[in-house]
Length: 306
Image (tube, rainbow, N blue to C red; front, side):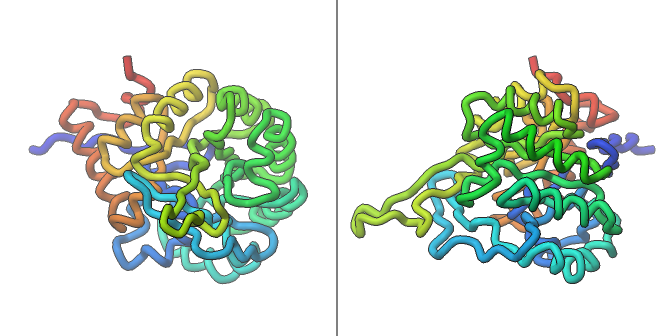
């Protein structure tokens, strides 16, 4: 008789995840792009690409650059807008047994509210991730997430517009991420996700030009993991809501580190570009780790680093 399998279930607000692994917004498209690689129902949740009220064209090319241990991107939240998501993309996702979290973006508070209000009434949406942290747009997003006051303004307005589980995605490009995390919770956020990308740049020394048309972009991948891990640890100790940790998670052991630091769940991002099945390999690896440690429930390891 074999050993009993560990319980991988976690809860983020009202979202019940069969395991603690989702995918980071912007690294998984809207699901269809990855569906040929594995059954999307294996995931704990799917967090789709940033969705705005109106279509956004994104930034000019080139807008990605590989760096040592990571990548820079300045996509600029390109997407086809809310109507396209509801009518063209969400029906595909409804066929899978997996909660769908929609990353919401906007130039103004009113735009965030319009998207949240529409999705609140849309079948198949389990939660909203309010993106106040993308560094690659000139209006909105990180502008709001750079201060407690801006954070409260957006989160409170979205909270009033929806009963869905509300997750606020935090920027690392701030002086005090704990203060902003507390502001988001005080304004009604059910959970927090962190971190988004770190602001960086790259230069071609022969051409004497920036490698990105936008000049700056968001740094992701293994290079940012130590920063992300420290911020998750600091935030998880300071707030009393679930935390989704992300930033350089490439393996199951990376994911376990984030959970030991206090994350209730994790999001796999840049790894998806390198290995399309990274997320399910990480799910299996977390289960193997729990078995090896004699742990019966994944929640038992959360925040237990000493």
